[in-house]
Length: 155
Image 1: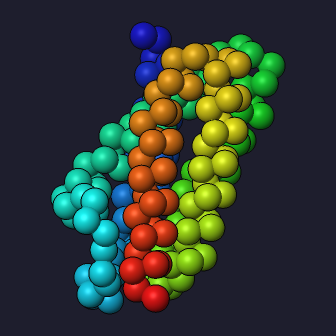
Image 2 (image 1 turned 90 degrees about the horizontal axis):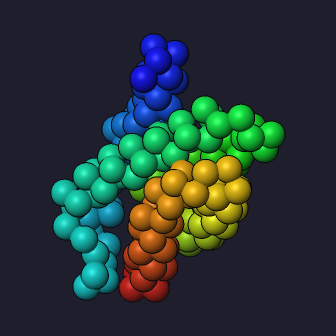
Image 3 (image 1 turned 180 degrees about the vertical axis):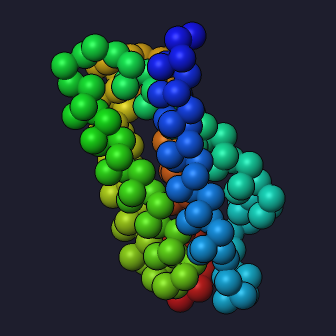
């Protein structure tokens, strides 16, 4: 791998991992969250950082595949990637810090829409990049179900 490609890959990985780490550190679940009734299918707390680390790594790899392509739509696809990443990162403080759980549910629906859009744009450029995002989409669907269930269980 060229030195230029190694640097681009490192940056592609560092962006989602670094931003995810910062948001995760700043917007940790509060004591109020611990008191909420949660659905039976809520994963154990230790699963979340592991899952998000893997998903952020997959995002970084996918974005690298798109970045290194010569496809004329790569910048548009990377813009969709950037927008969904910002929306992703804002969900955590909306849900955990602001305790706006219903708003967070609609926010995550927006995120799912953006991720589907991103996957479709990525697919036109690199099927590998698109397929690497399928676990992310599935995780978001689970997260939306958890979010909605928490809203309903705690009315």
